[in-house]
Image (tube, rainbow, N blue to C red; front, side):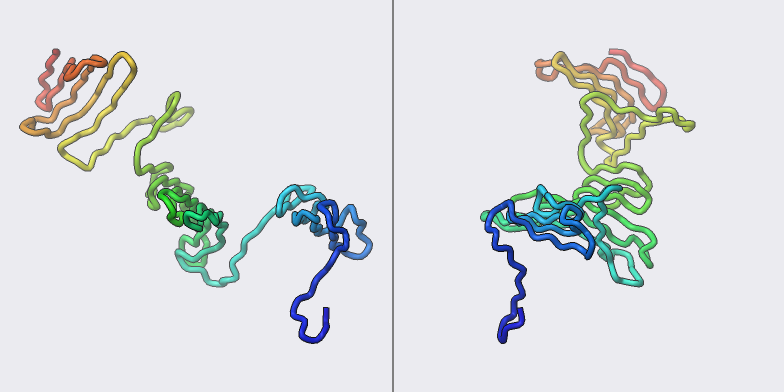
Length: 239
């Protein structure tokens, strides 16, 4: 539209219903193969003339969506691309989640991917999970270090955890505590009772490091029983 003072150009279809569509296509391309289609519902299709969502991409070899950065000399921390999930909730419009890729070093030769969620009321999403440039995963931490999986918090498995299956290296479990008082603990809990295996380095007046195997009778207050204790001097106590 080129009327004087007109600042909006419109492409109009006079069919006012959800079945109406506007096709964008190159010369010689049939309507059925139009490159871009806008339906009366507002859905937009690229590579499809019948999009089921606000934006749908389709290709015979699978559709690709690319977010590109035009920066020619990336530095660590630069944003490469980000998808935000925004809510207009009346309680507090905000970014409720996001997926983002950052440059991990100069020139962007390595990258980090971040997944963010909202973890408190009316707050903008923050990092929840990170996959660093070494494919190490951090949950609740942005620095997984040299570990394939680093979790800041508790872990729960409904069935079991397998370590070292079909590996040439000997598998191991390493329990590390930042406190010299609490030590480390393996705890089995069920509806009948509890079983503990723990290492107490120093607790109260107990300054002699020990490994203890303990049981607890379910429902009995103070029912914890030291079944077997091994002290650092080699002495073993049963009961």
